[in-house]
Image (cartoon, rainbow, N blue to C red; front, top):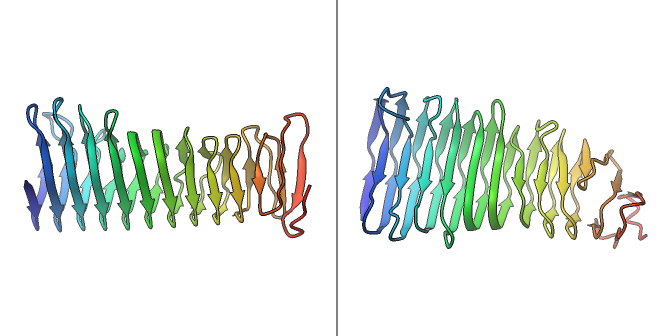
Length: 273
């Protein structure tokens, strides 16, 4: 058991770091603390770093109601890695800032699961990266990138984005993803790009590209710039153009099973083709 509650870590050097090579670790609480670190000549300064064992699980991590900032050029505000599995992580109610690099980075091994990120404000330059986690819930967050990158997921299954606001922060996941009730602003040509069999419902956005794989469900969204299905087709305010197999749209029972033809549908008509 490790508890870091109501503390301040500020200045040059590391923030809060847990690193161990033998044995497991569980029940880690980092709460109500102020962490603001600068670059350190001896290495990269992360706000919070948990580096797990190669032999045993790291479980039950709670990062709640903190202010976490690193200005290191290659520093990450929250970095969690496990040479074995990492399970049951809650990141909730934090202000997370990384003006030069990643907001958070998480990388588990096969079997890592159960990550919930909710009610945070996350501002970074490059975005966020999650690898090798099963069961990600990303809910009620405000995410803003100031430069490049995005809300990047890689090799993440059973992921849900719900009721978030994304500013210059596109979603990328090659696997099935549920995207529901989110707002997207200013992402330009960086697409909301999710894998086959995804479910994309009740989202709104300005200047948003939406790209999805085959056999996805796309329902009751209002994107005002582009809708794509892997081929870069355009969407105007009332017209979807679909050029990908097995895409269902807006309760219309629209099914497109060939790549040769492009179908248009006025969503106001709720027509069936």
